[in-house]
Length: 151
Image 1 (cartoon, helix red, strand yellow):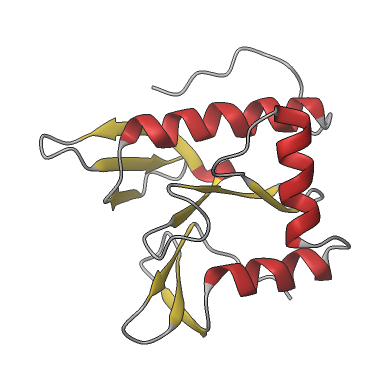
Image 2 (tube, helix red, strand yellow):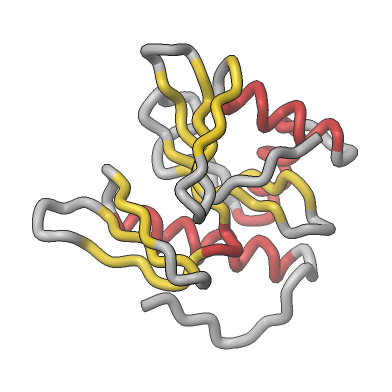
């Protein structure tokens, strides 16, 4: 049921969720990202609320909870804003290689496959979200505790 993507965001003009892949492929799904995240979580045996609650409980963080859609395939999305904000962009955790800032305070995201995304969000937020997601996955024993460095 899950449709793979690297980056996901809401297009309010068309009321669609836009899924971006590294090969520049765009897929559009009717409705908002939270609706799709909930469907994907349910298909994996949980709910969006359950995933949010788990993240908040284990990490002690209330804002911008990372959403673990599927732990088997390590499908984890990092929100750049409140998940209820129309400006929120969701970035797939496992694709991130490097996070940089442009001169006009946008974020450049380099993937492990060498692809580049430019996001209208602060790179500090995405770096913090990456660290939070890593801590969460360690607490769930889905990844080993080791030195993880994002440049």
